[in-house]
Image (cartoon, rainbow, N blue to C red):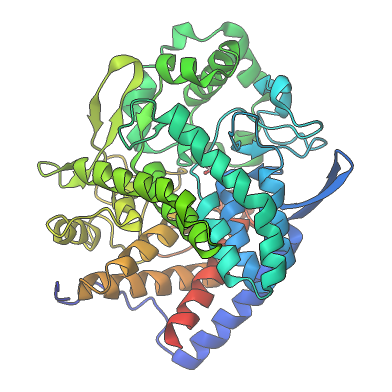
Length: 486
Ligand code: GLC
């Protein structure tokens, strides 16, 4: 048992218990309103789909890992919508099993790249149009969570009829195409697949994508049509060169006919991503758990084995020299460790992959106020690192989605380490307080928890507003915390 010697607990967290509880409850209602506001109803192939868009200010389609997370919040406030959310998420699944990063709402155009830019027509399910890459596979975790928290067993079983086979097929796709060498670690081929698009951990891999190899037409298209830097604040967003590379990859993959055997082998960007793989391990455990609870234990075995294999492989990426787990750049025959001080190095906690020997070292790094244990932890890049940028997306600010994984990861180690338990509880408290203070933004200032510096100045807010992720995560964290008390 690792003892807790007292961690930095900034006085910024409201200590007036009664007042705090009132405010938190009020925020639950506000979170529910945001999720209602972001509901999008669309009829495709003659069927009505209900999905939640991340933010109507910019992200007006269905995003894979956002949607899965949102379902885990919705099950507590509107179970029917939670089932529908995941049904809609799997509705565009490709024949090979891929569940895409984006499922498009066909009439919406403000998000760039729009659907036609992907050239994925031949993989469409009728009118359901998607992008061609994926995102962290939170789906299995969400399916299991929604199933277990469902107030109505009959409806929950009905929900599984559709979502369980799709989830199994998705996992089979990921294993087959993204880990052809059976290493236990899946390969992601685009920074957008990692979900942490603009993270400093991709900086060196991005420079391997030669700008002169990207067709001029692709660059012209970005110059003429990119919208994120106009609808949002340009200084918070990726650079123009990053966007050339993002769209250069899309162009390359579509020219390879979206054949993932070729893409994984030939992509100039290919990494074994620690966060993606930690989610993958946990999703396999969750999927196996669902199968076991519906009497399909035999089929569960394969997914349990995959989870164990990935956990071992994650533990093996630990570098004692750098005191962190490392992503690995495997593009075009490379095998280079990526050593960057980002908060994704704590994701193996979520997978349960951290060994007894590694645990104190991981906690020492996370609890350091100079690096990650800021007033409102956990910044996407270490506060004292040269890479840290206060407002640029994925390069400094605190994101609720990372906090969800880290807090649940810490609690997984709570019985072995008092410090992990204490940090997990504190992280839930600061995340709830942060969201309740300023509302539902894409990300927050890790030093003071603000999302609207200057409060009424819309132009300087952190990312886009009325955001579904913080709303759903707020509800989930709050309810899970309640459940722990009883
Ligand atoms: C940004 C994020 C990505 C997220 C999407 C919608 O692209 O980088 O992780 O899924 O927004 O919220």
